[in-house]
Length: 67
Image (cartoon, rainbow, N blue to C red; front, side, top):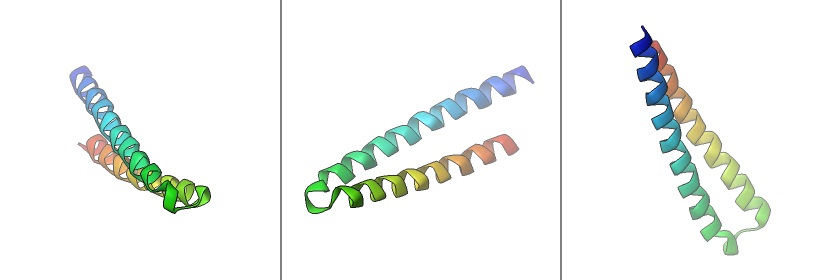
């Protein structure tokens, strides 16, 4: 049981790192287009992207827990 918990914890940590990298990458993409958008539009897009990525993360997390 302990091995399963350790495995899940490590897997979740890896997933979190991947999601954080994806968020950071999207943030960079968004800020690279900032000159063509207002600050409010950039912020909106950033929040939308983060929500989408966290949704993906939560779905993966849920699937891992179900295993």
